[in-house]
Image (cartoon, rainbow, N blue to C red; front, side, top):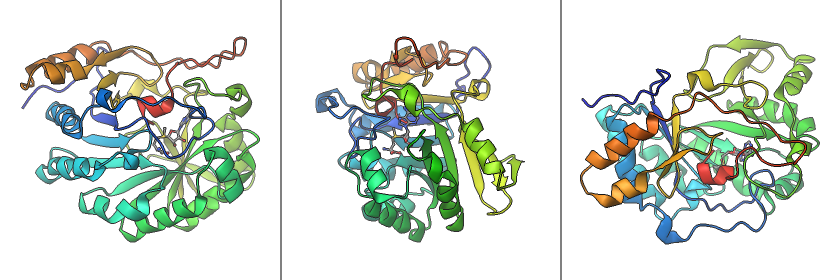
Length: 333
Ligand code: SAM
């Protein structure tokens, strides 16, 4: 057994999120600008290199892998990565292999994901109104996403819906989204919009504190705190009237760093120790410098020794600047 990865604050790193591409077939307005420049393919880790880094993390105590992006299911041959990583589920080294997706490709891939041992997936969906959906995603087709969700459910995958709460955009729909998700047996998690990357419209205008959403829901629903945890930052309540779980991810109004067990690998092999800080480590150099994993382990140890205590997102109102320059599609949601 290799030693676990423990950061300077005694937190054990057991959860690796891997962004396999910065590309996406949608351009959600709060996530990307319309004219994004994407990375040249040569800068990306190959899927074999991604597997190698993931495997090194599993050897050092990672129990949960989440594949994300950009849109992970638009990366060419992505199923080969799921197939190869599933060996860690089979061996018992890994508890969970999962993904976050916009759902657009799920009709095609749901059953194959289930066959690779994926049990739960997160699907991002902010509205059930087709026109609003097109406006938020800039060109997405809601029907296709809904068929994808259906395909996932039919394949036996547990689906959790993630919705970013956007002031003046979907705030009137949150109760409806919850009724719909819970009616189909799916949990719903709400996310506060985070100041990541330059985008066109002012993010200050989009920010809707979940404390307000929660108070509004409580006018017509009873929310009981629930101990349910997925290893991520969401805190849950069970809604008595629907019986479903409702999660809140509140990076802006409530800091969740004290129990952070996560690090994030980008598609270029950069390891971010915190979503809300710029400090990072280049694991690609270690991977490419030697076929032996000793250098990679050393780079991982060095990176984790620099994991910060937490982030301090602030929307800089005076200069209307994001707290972190890179987009969510770079670090992976
Ligand atoms: N394409 C996949 C998807 O749509 O789920 C995975 C990547 S996407 C970047 C992951 C999640 O991050 C989505 O739920 C998205 O809504 C969310 N997200 C993107 N930018 C965000 C921001 N600035 N603040 C909060 N959430 C954001």
